[in-house]
Length: 175
Image 1 (cartoon, rainbow, N blue to C red):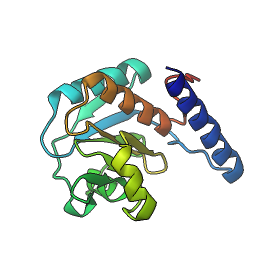
Image 2 (image 1 turned 90 degrees about the vertical axis):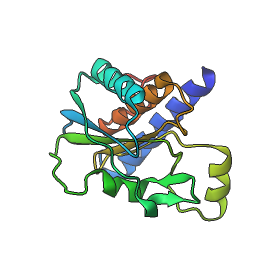
Image 3 (image 1 turned 45 degrees about the vertical axis):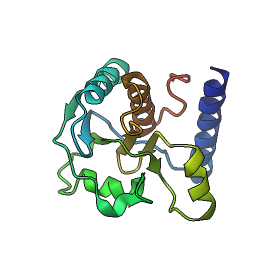
């Protein structure tokens, strides 16, 4: 528990500094709904748990779209999903409204840096379970090959949606 509290506190302080120094809020201006987009096959147990958690924590309507094929050019080393490339595949038609967030659900561990040098070594030992891109209204969560329980995946999804709303350090810092 102490480790989690330190992580959430460090995250809140770091992102607060980034916002203060850049003068830019790291959040969506408005968030009225979330659309879950599974990559690959539907994962009903995860999707239901995520929807329930987001509706409970944020009182947001959640809908699920049909599964999307995982973009081949977004899979690095055959095992990690490179989030910046995968994010484009979540809304290929660009039909999403400005107050709608997309939350991708994938069995792949996530990566945010190209697989070069130190980044590649870090990803071997530390899986990234969730990533939010607040400026684009997109977040991704991993089920780690469907090995995680519904609870941790739903908590990660809530944490990433909190980033989209500008609530860094959620759920420890609920302000």
